[in-house]
Length: 78
Image: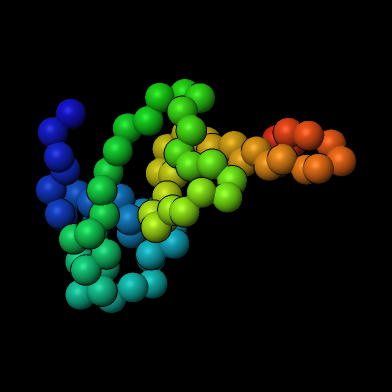
């Protein structure tokens, strides 16, 4: 897959809702640092307790959140 243009990244972000109220200049800044990635079903993005400096915003598909609860073991939240 080729990298999307900054304009198409801005369009994706604007349509996704979270960034809908940003003005064009601020949206362009977010789009300039955004990375669009395709992920495979079941792939782990990060693990509980790990250091992560990324924000993941799912534009299409779904994500699950799994947490370890000491009294219950692994628990799927979403």
